[in-house]
View 1 (cartoon, rainbow, N blue to C red):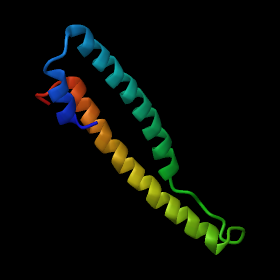
View 2 (tube, rainbow, N blue to C red; view 1 turned 90 degrees about the vertical axis):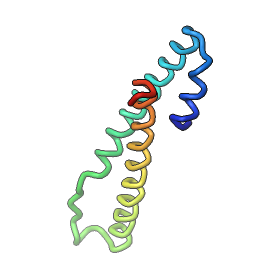
View 3 (cartoon, rainbow, N blue to C red; view 1 turned 180 degrees about the vertical axis):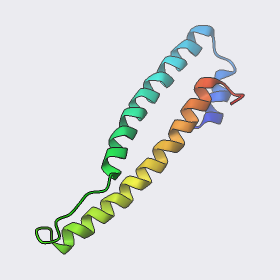
Length: 91
C-alpha cells in the first residue's frame, strides 16, 4: 500500500476510520520492526570453517546474504512509507 494511496484514502475518513487506520499502521509497524530485527541478525557475518564447509555451502551462504540484503532494503522502504503515513502527510 503506497503512502499516496493511504493519504488520498484518509481524506474522506471519519474519526473512527482514522483511528482504525492508525491502529492498523501501528500493527504493521510492529510486525515490520520485528521482521527487520530478524533480517539484521541474518546479515551478521558468519565465520565458516573452511575445512568442514563445502564450496556449495559457501556459495549458498553468499546467495542467502544477497537475498537478505534485498529483503532489508524492501523492509526499510516499507518502514519509511508506514512512518510517513502514521505521522501524517506533512512528513
